[in-house]
Length: 327
Image 1 (cartoon, rainbow, N blue to C red):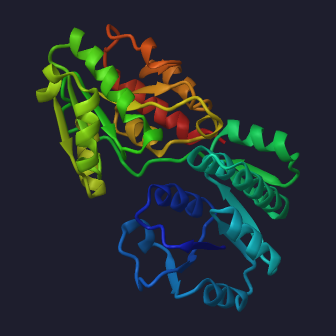
Image 2 (cartoon, rainbow, N blue to C red; image 1 turned 90 degrees about the horizontal axis):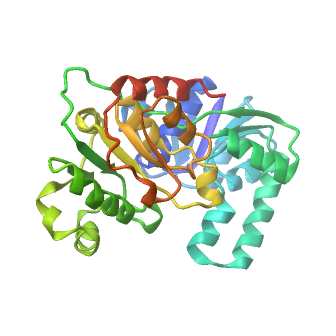
């Protein structure tokens, strides 16, 4: 089987999850539109990567193959390749129309994207969802009849047993966009520090300059010396960083986009033995945290129990094992 990813996504947060999907389908070739001429990551090096300067050139090359089954990660590729004769395995990573509406508040864009989404689901030969909640939602929305799978976003990271956990260490890993709710993380940490005087918050982000303003706005000045900001570039460094952490924040608003989600960060936290403080809006996977007593599930950030921090390493590793078995 082959895959078409169109625009180059090697270093995006989505790429790790998509490459896992390709592995499960025994994909051997990836067609992409990029000026890059070779794979620079270990994840891509296992595939025969074929780069083309335009969408037209890439699809033309694919049409010369006998293989007509292709994995795609977006609605537009699914529509285009289905129209020219391919049988598409459509990997659905999120709710594009609703995500767009949250950003732009445009009812017209919502209508147009819903129309494209409906067409993509009708044309798809098979569909891979990232969560059971997502599968139920789209079956209810479009009454789907094609073959379907559920495959959560998983982690390439592993817990390093030789690395000692830092007592009462809390972490946040990710960007500083409004939807990632780092402000909620800082507010929660202010409360935690009132009960755990040795607690420290470690923030790993690629946007440290933007973060400064957020910290100044939300962090109690008395806690300034207990927050450390870093930027992590490599998989190995992230694995070492998370292996030292006891608790990780994954807080999200209550909306459809988050109800459907399978956050890669959840998988990375659990695979490195991090207990997760997670919002209940991650509908399919927050219950796993409760089942294995490896964190806290919050309806609201006010529900955080500041007296409930007894790190459970085994619970997180077992929860990740269950995550990998979801289907």
